[in-house]
Length: 152
Image 1: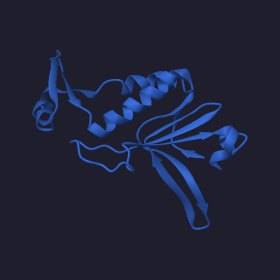
Image 2: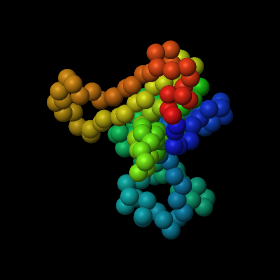
Image 3: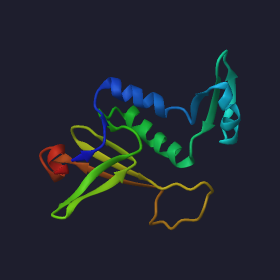
């Protein structure tokens, strides 16, 4: 079972792809918000008649997540997560449900892919056992008869 919205139609997948394809965020500010925007690190792109268009680079971890999400999109996965607050239920206990936040989720008729991003701003040494991505791939043939049954 998932807790979070999924892009399971072509329109939803395209809309999410358009949000994730650029390495920066764009936002429009009113003229009286100009100083606030610059103080928050926004870079002026253009001046309109009644507003200013700004952009700011996304955080490095979000860029990495978006890159992996776009890869699954380009592979043609019909179901992908929407946004950055996607969760799955990992256990149902008497005292409550245990959930796990997932960075990238995709599934089709044969596989389920769960990606967890590990990113740092500057290159550091890491042990071979720690990877930048923890990817779990489940084949429906090996674990159950349907993807829905796997999540219950």
